[in-house]
Amino acid sequence: MNSIVTLTDVNKTYHGTTKETRALQHCSLSIEKNAFTCIIGKSGSGKSTLLNAIGGLIQVDSGSVLVNQQELTKMNKKELARFRRENIGFVFQFFNLLQEQTVLENILLPFDLNNEKADLDFVNHVMKYLQIDDIKNKFPCELSGGQQQRVSIARAIVGKPNIIL
Image (cartoon, rainbow, N blue to C red; front, side, top):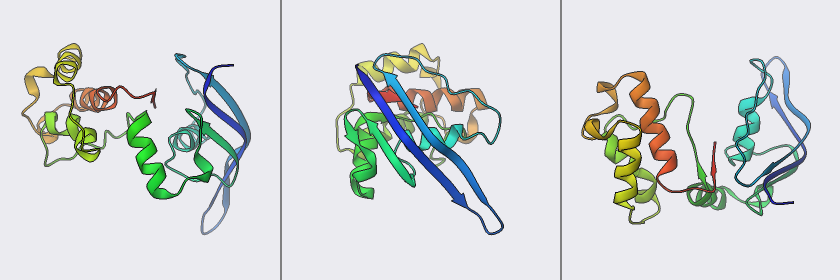
């Protein structure tokens, strides 16, 4: 089996002030390399929690989260941050663009965080493909929602991550 993601018996409960919410209960999942996988379910069914667990954005209560041969539940915050930067591209629901940075600066942000040099030919290719090359000097507040989403997608792709969530 050539899995890039393997969850085994994962549990996650959120403890609110008035009640507990069990977001993941005995969740097991395997995703093969080079697969396109959709997580489908009604609102509140645990989709975001599942993606956040795979992305190392949250700690699960129990179980195993193995991503690209790395056990995320055994990593500390610093190790998780590095793992995310080096392995995972995120396309967030609300874009998470930095408002004081241009489109190009937002796209290049992961390289800046890793002190790496970007493959500018690939960055330009991605921007052209996503039809945002003509707005690279604009700020997020000057963009439509669709343009902001494409900037977020570009930022997730340009680092050539192993996984895009």
